[in-house]
Figure (cartoon, rainbow, N blue to C red):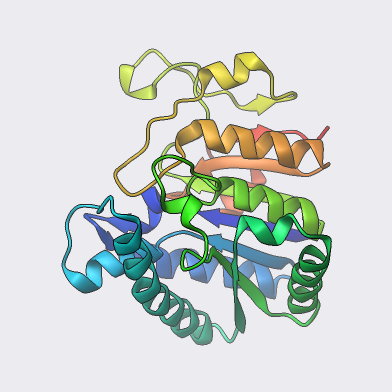
Length: 255
């Protein structure tokens, strides 16, 4: 099974720094899935957070150029950590940096999908992030295309023939109301991404993330319409438990 895993900023960062202990555990779980015969594809956030860590910055800047610089520095640190940890489990990785423009042109899209597919077939885990050096839209307050890599995840999954997408975040899934209010209940199964489902999804996020639950529901809508089952779950749970349904989660059924 080809499993696409997305790790967002709200999970990968803690106090404006990368949460390396949590990430190391999650890498071990992805490596275990790979060794069990699945083909794992990873979409990760965290480059800006890593850049902030390098520079000792405690608040996300708003200037696009500054964010791009932080992302460039942070991406190097982030991918080095991924490589060092996957090496422990003898699982090779390959870095893939994308922008939304890559999905607009048929020739580029074909090239992207061919590369990712070749990695998967050769037992290499593609580690995907947005190329913030080129794509200003992601970092601009006025026009956010990928919204913390949620829509990037949907476009990747749709085009590489993923069997399952797992979007990990810092809440257990989609709730009928804000879970912090104490009145919301988790929505375990979604058969169709309707206006009612979108109405339950909050656009609120943390200082490093951009998407909130709304963009995750939007991504799930794209993926399920493409015939891909999608799970939104809390990254504190083991991936095996998330996939098996033995922990709280929201399962969006493919159409």
